[in-house]
Image 1 (spheres, rainbow, N blue to C red):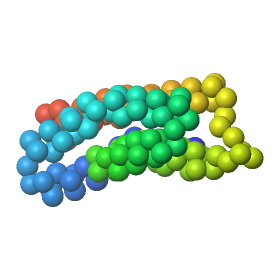
Image 2 (image 1 turned 90 degrees about the vertical axis):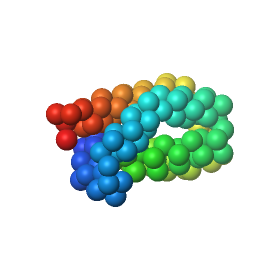
Image 3 (image 1 turned 135 degrees about the vertical axis):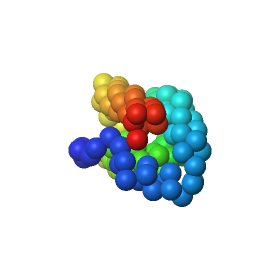
Length: 127
């Protein structure tokens, strides 16, 4: 797996400049952080159901919103898992429950750390 910083603060600064308002940036990042658990839950449900279509939709949503929010490590991890899911064929079937559980745990841990770092970033002393 790729090792990347959790956040790309340069992206966050650029996003703040594009929005032109620190309050708008903070609101966007807070909404993103608040929705992370729901997005990972949806990915987990799709993996549990072996629903590739729902997985792709949920993964695309999480990956693109993570890119926008400067959550580079989470975006990259989701992209890597997307490639892994796309490689599933009858000859290369779904992995066992323990492997799927590990994937979800990695996503959850990284999502939690991403949310924590974003909340530090938007705090008055963070940025």
